Length: 147
Image 1: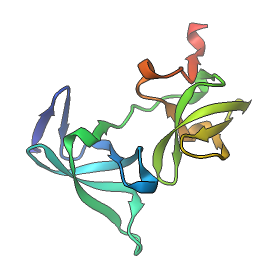
Image 2: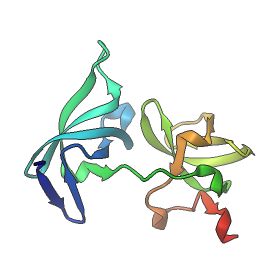
Image 3: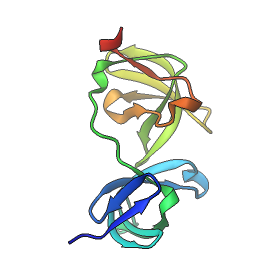
Image 4: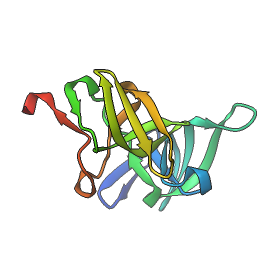
């Protein structure tokens, strides 16, 4: 039976898909997809899904519970009307990074300015999800069913 651990609001167990906050230099504020492989009190051992060593093996490390959040449920991003000036997260360089929607090109393409960068980047909607903390930001999208 898998161990189960309660972290304030969230319960995580071995095998859960999560996102891990990294605060190392160029990765600061980025969330990396990972899977929990071991629980030990307030720490978790995770295996990253997209973050690999130089020889191509997934990075495995121990992280504190405060650096975890659950992976979001799948969502149909085409059901959203994206808003210029809104805040979204984009999968960039193997991690979810926060950025501002600068332009909606067509139904499936958006231009984003990542926080901490001066460059604009074009991304597919498949690589976006809404910012998790909408209370601190301008919504990046509105559900079409609510219009």
